Image 1 (cartoon, rainbow, N blue to C red):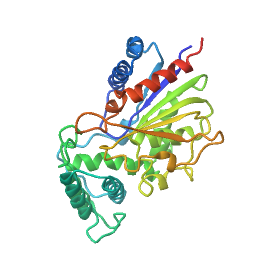
Image 2 (tube, rainbow, N blue to C red):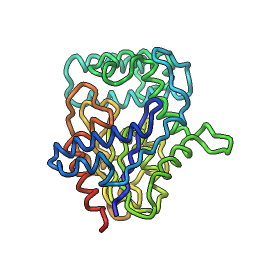
Image 3 (cartoon, rainbow, N blue to C red):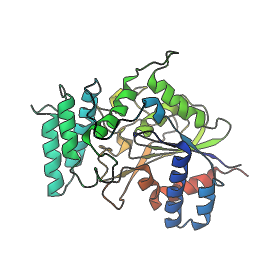
Image 4 (cartoon, one colour):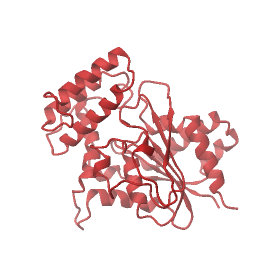
Length: 317
């Protein structure tokens, strides 16, 4: 019996779940081939190796923002400012090429013009101005699908909207509850489920699994912002943030050039579960200027190779 494989996406516009599933599977297959698992490539692409599902929730955020639109000021702007500030500070803590460092320092000053560290009082104008500055970093505009600062801020606000725990529907269910419901529907309570989560999806997956009763032999997180203490982790539930009980193994992958990640070593950010499981973080280095997309991570041999091995180990005769 093959295991379930659930992909959980991050921020972004509306998607075609079936098309996204195919793209993610093909990226995983490419990484598997590069990791020496060529015999499993067709199995991964065709879905024979695992019962693959794409947990889609992007439509719950509403219609996409038009490229070039400047979003109106919202209560989420302070969270976006804090997220960008923490990400910038983590990036500056390591050696950075001169031009990148100058851009990052300039954006930081725009986010916190009076020297504040958490973006207090930063309105839409400061956030948009800083986002426009950050788009000068190699690849963010060309390869990040962020054609404008307005589009970038609008999508980053999805993180704030999820963590705000608001926007109830007609049944009184908040946005975050509805999003977690989509992920839980994709899991297989009758058998082992391997979860691969990206970006905001790592936050969603971790919170979903806190109350899950099934088997999770492996959780893989890609480009996760959970390490951002103030903007993200302090707003997660429950507190303190810990490894969910059913997770038997957690692999966390990060790229040095992924601005969204911030603090990458999640084993320093979360507590172990009852079985003493902690995340194991591993750095990967992707080719190209924009490294945040999930497919960039999945095509990495270090990521795909270990995931293929976990799928084989979870396969029941």
